[in-house]
Length: 205
Image (cartoon, rainbow, N blue to C red; front, top):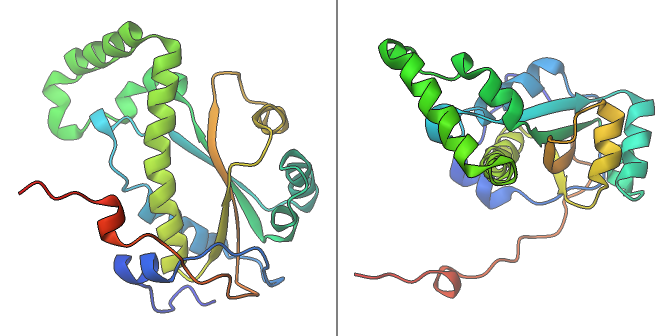
């Protein structure tokens, strides 16, 4: 796919996106992956902390090891690349200067101290869960951005986090909301089958 191809809007991407498990042999240009990540990084994050971290794995040998960690799921090995979506609250809070908005520079020191104190009060496990939840918001943006740019994807929760952590040589506090196989589509996938709005929505007028 050309990096100048038509990009779907949000509604179009949401309506057309399905999980894809078969891909062509065409690699995804790094420029295109960067465009996807540039869109996904706009995901909202309280205090602007942005705890998500992403590893883009295209190396064939490492993909095979990831496939083993994902209980042999074939789309991992077949994908052009695999995105490992992680959350690292320790790194995020240690580098608070990276996320304080320039417009709040005059209050930066007080903000950093307040934010860190808040998470210290929460405790390590609750903070880790908070970051995991925030990184799932990023994951949603990521999946829509992939579809918008014409890239098929298959998000997976079926993998051994300890093995993925070992492969990347990451510390124990890092968590993984998902790994995502990506590539240009070699199948249409199943049509969407979702609940109607009135199945999951209550309007309290």
